[in-house]
Length: 405
Image (tube, rainbow, N blue to C red; front, side, top):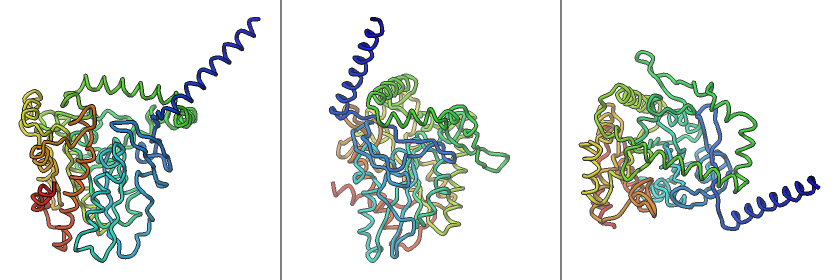
């Protein structure tokens, strides 16, 4: 009798689980994981994965056979083709907008119209992966990018978290590689391979779990609940604009403590290493500093209130510091945030965020469009001058971008 009751119970339980799974699929719910552990880079996108991304906006995402959110590209560069390789984090990965609306896709279409490239094809290749810092982007350049023979390496640099991501004491991420100074030499620190978290992620039970996760909507519900709870905890811990996760207020200040001074030292060293390696390969190096939502908020009063509350005197401090390094070290920098702020204030539009949280998070479609157009016009001007001059690219095309609105 007891066995019969247990059998009925388990059949009912399995039936309920199956019904819940079916209901979730019918409703269109999805919260897949797009990442797998990687010995060189810490983590990478899973090749050939297709799933809905349920972050700031619901977008169907396809990862190509090489593990990038991009269309397929041959490694051998076609004749009469000009290639730009874009390195960066989630801004480049751009899972919150359709791929054709990402800034690098906009940039590709716009650059194709350059007079200097009228007899050539243009390919912009995305190598963005969420969570990457400059150290991982340098390793990505070495490990994956050079196989595609780019003419330009464009580093999309996000000051509000790339600096802290580059220094272990601030990033506190045991799953990523770092670079550290040994004397005056900046060398890779791959200690993450020996960490317990990496060993767990490489174990067969964990790999099996993640395989099941991408097939089970019930497991995805649990994962989303945990991720939501963690974001809520982060918003409480972090000082940010409207609770914006990932915004390191200290990045907007002149560093006064040793940890941030060393984080800047490592970051600037990584930028110089990348510059040197790009030049050695005969390519051109371009840094584009991205924006954070509060920097380009359309309401000046909101920006001022944030600066007072956070004790920040200049929202563009890190952007100007990187631009200054470019001037001294002879590489080109496009500083987007001041241009985007002027546009957002003039047209009273949010360039970051999606309902119900406009103004925070990643670029929305309008932000991507504008950023892609600005970068493309700078590249066209660069090409028209036949060579990349030392220092910053000029923004003489800005008024034309604004007038097009």
